[in-house]
Image (cartoon, rainbow, N blue to C red; front, side, top):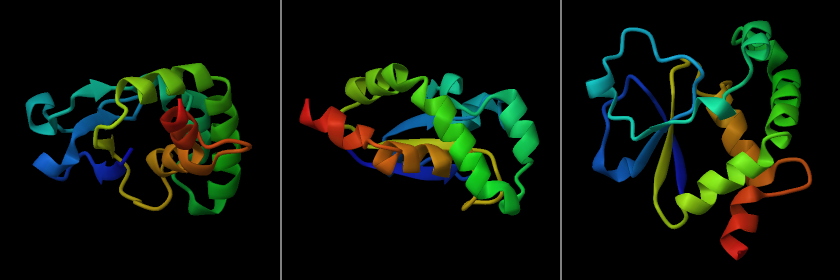
Length: 127
């Protein structure tokens, strides 16, 4: 399974495959038609408290990932379900943050690829 990341404000492309918004809030100033989102997966976004605590501060990035991964671990069955439904399809996680290195979509992809004690992408592909 191939998962890419893309800012919500970048134009959609045919190579994006399934476009999944992975934010709890809709991106500011972005029309729903222009976003070309296939699925809004807000349940896997960081909690409001964690998002506000992080505030996109790169100094907090390691601790943010640790806390966010803990939240994601509690939702592992939800993650597995979506991955099974989209297996074999190209997918793009769409996010709103300006910082393309320190954002929740990056942390989510890292969790899926090499999260603590698992790789959901590999595990789902084996089933």
